[in-house]
Image 1 (cartoon, helix red, strand yellow):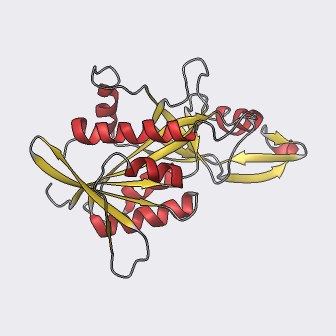
Image 2 (cartoon, one colour):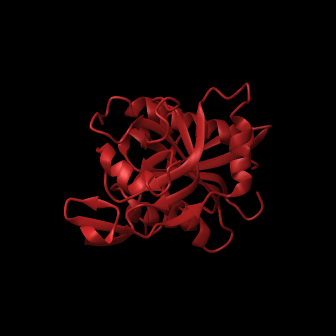
Length: 255
């Protein structure tokens, strides 16, 4: 594994995601990192008679700030080849093709909350007498990794339905389709999903000291960021997300 000490660190943001990741292997053991109160767990899996280590950890709170901190600490402590976020997200792509539990793997992630609030006459994005001038920033998933993801979409041994496209990331929960239309689809109409952490994972992977991990976000659809938003499909979405991560590690990604 060259300069890498483990195959992957798998990050999660909330309990339901963490529990799902902990179910993909049965022999997790708590790992103590000196000077760090964070709970880390490690497990091992075999691939072609070789044994590989994977580490998982969960944010204390949701959002990009917590994701940045946890990803940075985990990379420094475990030097993973891959930094992966597994979990749930809102699907905001073509409704006819996106189903609950479908997996979204973003090739590009952009922060839709960066910008400037102005008067309603200064922007085409308006909420009553308030206007918003977006200044989106973006990060991209490694091309080699995305080529591997795309190659799995038609493989007979892949039981997951995978969508590839942009992911919008922001610091607040959206449960209103008008907000999606005005602030997200108006800028990047082909955006496939929406979450609150993914931008940070790719950003950290790009900026930590070498050897840098390759970052990947794998999030499954649990709702559609509209007024019908509920928790009903979160467990199923967490299951398909973590399952696809396991599939990638055990059969697809170079280790």
